[in-house]
Length: 168
Image 1 (spheres, rainbow, N blue to C red):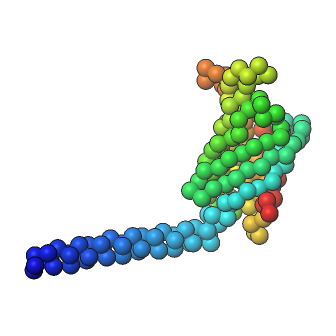
Image 2: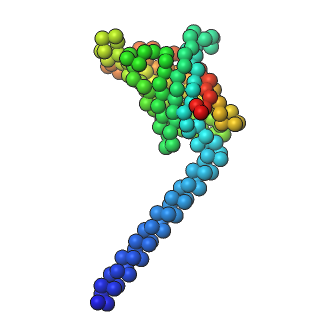
Image 3: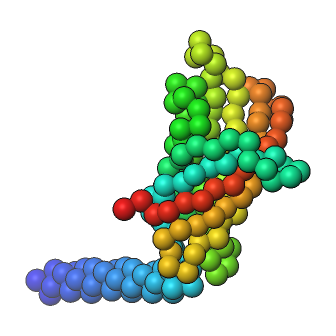
């Protein structure tokens, strides 16, 4: 009887210790996230309506523009969909983002492309640096595009910029 009682008490103490440690870890993590958010780190999270401008890399002159929508998720992943190319010809972009400092972020995403017959033609990687406004409801970004053939050969590069507002 005494041995069973000791096992029950030991098990209860162990369970309480694990729960306390987990609760402390969650609270500590929330405080870290709260501090990072206050320092600008989490403010990009959410969904954004963006206007993308394909630009001349040398002059910055706009070549064409179109609407896109991007979602920056907690933990540093993102999704991008665009009206710049028919969805039958490319996949949504999947990527990552991170906080650099203050209101500055960087993000990169990759999408696969296909021809009209559905044949895989390669992929594109977009890399941008974004600056969020002080209210956290708009950002502007600029960066590059890298175009790859199915065998992984870089076939070209380009430039673009965006202006975005938080989707409400």
